Length: 212
Image (tube, rainbow, N blue to C red):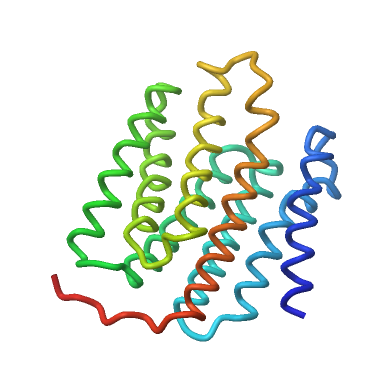
C-alpha cells in the first residue's frame, strides 16, 4: 500500500505539469495539491516517532500552500509554506550531524543569503522574510544527517524553484523559463526531500543530541 501511495503521488505531481496552465477550476486546484498531499500521507503512513510525523507535517503544509496560492492568494500560500519550513527546520535540528551551534549557524547563514537574493529580485521585504525561512530550512537540511543523497539536492531545487518565482516579475520577466521549470523543480524537490528523510529515518537510529 505504501508503494501505491508513493506511486500515486509521483504520478499526480508529474502529471500536473500537463494541466498547470489551465484555468484554476476545482479539479485543477485539487490536482495541484494532490502530489505533495499524497507524499505527506505516504510519509505519515510510515511514521514511527515524532520525527516521522514532523516530515509528514512539513509536507502537508506544502500541499496546503499549493492550494492556497490558487484559492486565497500569494500571502496565505506563502505563510503555509513558511510554517512548513519551520516544521522542517525543527526536524533537521533534531537530526543534525554536528553541534546545535554549528547547525543553527549553517541554517542562519544560508537563510540570510537566500533572503538577500529574494529581496534583490523583488525589492519586497515580505519576500525576504519568506526567503529567509526557505534558506534556513535548506541550511538545516544540509547540516542534518539526511543531506545525502536525496535531501541535499532536494532543498537546492526548492530554492531554485522559488528563485524562479521571484525572478518571474523582474530578471526573467517575459521569459518562458519560469513557466517551464517552476513546477518540475518544486515537485522534484518535495519528492526528493520526502523520500530522503523517510529512508533516513528508517535506516538510522537518531543520534544523541549534542549539548554544544
